[in-house]
Amino acid sequence: MPVVVARLLWACATPEEERRLRELLRPGSWAGDGCLTRRLGWECDALVGIEVWADEAVAGRGVAALTARLRTAGLPVPVACLRTVPGDGWSTD
Image 1 (cartoon, helix red, strand yellow):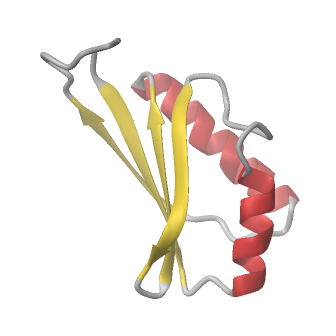
Image 2 (tube, one colour; image 1 turned 90 degrees about the vertical axis):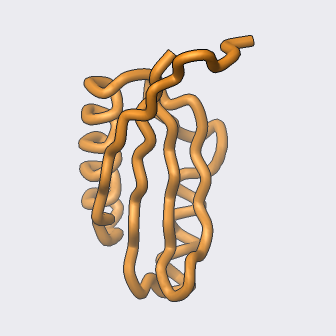
């Protein structure tokens, strides 16, 4: 089963922005329908979010909805990159 991986990048995020993002994106609070998993962490001086989605259309809608939520909360919008990863031979168990 192919999946879509979304990489979200907040360059030079502040500790306060990280705290607010973690609150907004905490597990169980909001993942969007079709979001299989989400991770948020630091890579050098950038805060990076990784989301795995069930399909491309759902991923696009989910990232757009996330962008709207961030703007409403007064948080910076990340640079987003979506890639489809083929899943031939992957176990779906």
